[in-house]
Image (tube, rainbow, N blue to C red; front, side):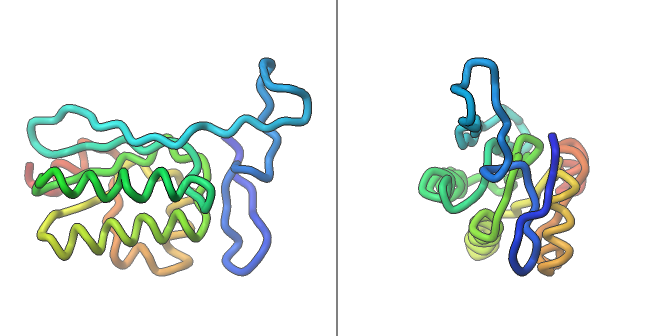
Length: 147
């Protein structure tokens, strides 16, 4: 996966829509963008949700309700595994902060795991790392929550 800088203030990074990730099955000149997805993974200790695809203004109508739905399940601990996120712009960051605020307000502990390095850098540049707790692995996130 190649991470490159996007233009504008903040220099959002990713391999999203500006890159031409072409598969053999795709018509020439057409980029293949992974479909947005949120898959829950069975865990007896907490709810683990694996997030995949681009998190941006295009996928926000899909991601935002799915992320909010995770909180409606009533789990005390939620881990978002971001290992399959390939691109994140300011709207994607806003979605993560929104779900964190909602979780915090409802007494749910929400943490992030397996965050790509480029996305960690976005968190640092924007100050989001002051709110969002990030762990290297899902196992480390679960251990930190004491579950």
